[in-house]
Image (cartoon, rainbow, N blue to C red; front, side, top):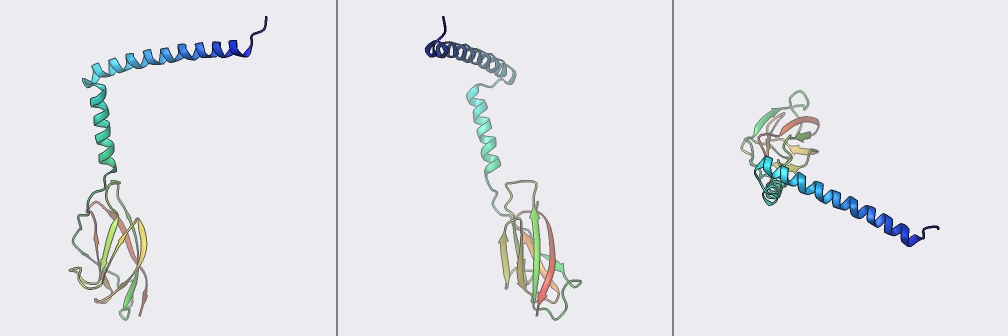
Amino acid sequence: MAMGRGETFQIISFGLLVLGGLCVLAGTILGFWGSRISDKGYLETIGILKTHVEAARKRQEPAWTPFKRIDASNFIPPTANFAIIQFKLWSEDNTVPLMIRIASSKDGLGVINEVAGPSGVVTQMLTEKQAFYISFSHPNIKYEVIASGWKE
């Protein structure tokens, strides 16, 4: 006698029921041994994991570094009034905001550009011949900065 669709579904359902029961049993045993090894319960472990995930996603506030003088005399003539500055920023810590300030004076007053992002190009007015100043939003930022051109 041939099996109909209903009987086939019942057999598949029973197989899935047995498989599900085995998964519940395996999960219970692994959870018990995990709790014994770590001395923490399920809720504590989930709370610790949540704390780690939130800390990894939270951005740090900027902690600006002092301005550093960049001598661009090899790239900009003494008659240039503006420098075209290209930068690249990176950090191993993904919570560090990648921001740079490019200024015409060492105190950061006057003409200043503040740019966020891993790379960019800025046209900076020069008040000091063949030089400009840079500051970063965090001391751990690594960078490449070059004067790629000029305007008079």
